Length: 81
Image (cartoon, rainbow, N blue to C red; front, side, top):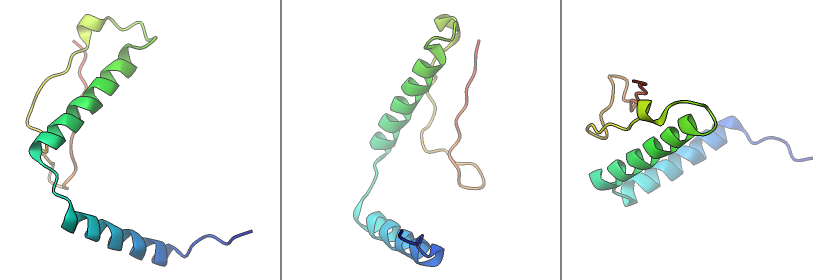
């Protein structure tokens, strides 16, 4: 049986790969908007699938993509009306 990887080495490898990718890939605002819409559609579908929730109460609203809170985290809001 293979022993688990050393957490320090694993963390170092992840940091290296992340840094390398960030240096080579630029994510556009359009790409972020597309991803946000796809996620919103998936959440909306999950909320409406076999739940009995009235579809007229669930909708997607648009807002500026990429807005971060003070800790640097993206926010997601769910509302039923």
